[in-house]
Image (cartoon, rainbow over all chains, first blue to last red; front, side, top):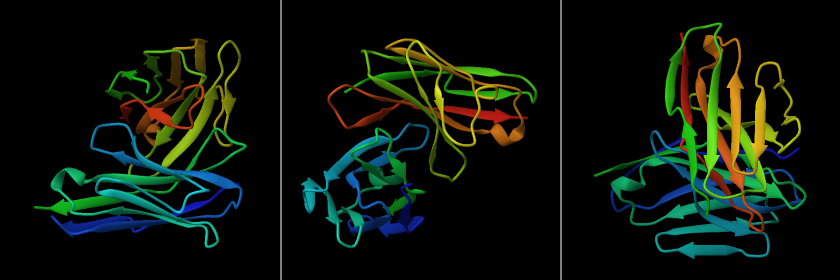
Length: 112
Length: 114
């Protein structure tokens, strides 16, 4: 089955800095890669996703890149703000499955 | 998108008792799932809730411990039976609507077993 590794487990940055979270996956059949943000006391919320036919996708301060050859994808947050502080999960899903495999999460702390 | 209401949001339970968690969606959805999130850990799929039939459980989870119901396309329950402190976790309901790849999550139920 699919295995998703996520690093780092904790990331501490100053407000205004950039943050990068990296994930690798094992199943070459995976073709959908969502990223979720989980704030304290809430459920995960999808913030951006990318499909295997695209190398990069941006949405305001958030971007995701995908390297299919290397089987890794990354989340980039620019101009971080304190409200970006949360746990971020990457996930990978193959076309033949309805169920994503999640990484272990990254706790992002943005210091004002 | 789908709006998911999960109840209760949190509970503290005595060991040996059972707790039923409810998940209500504001629209009909094709698929409903239950996840467990242990402290500091990732999301682990417990089972897929099937409408009108028995749930499909993942390896390591059994029906006797986690009975699941899904009587219609908008509602499901997960029961955590004969609880022990090791069952202390956040339990999350997730849904997938037809025609989309996105998964939506409820706010979770934080369970503490003492």
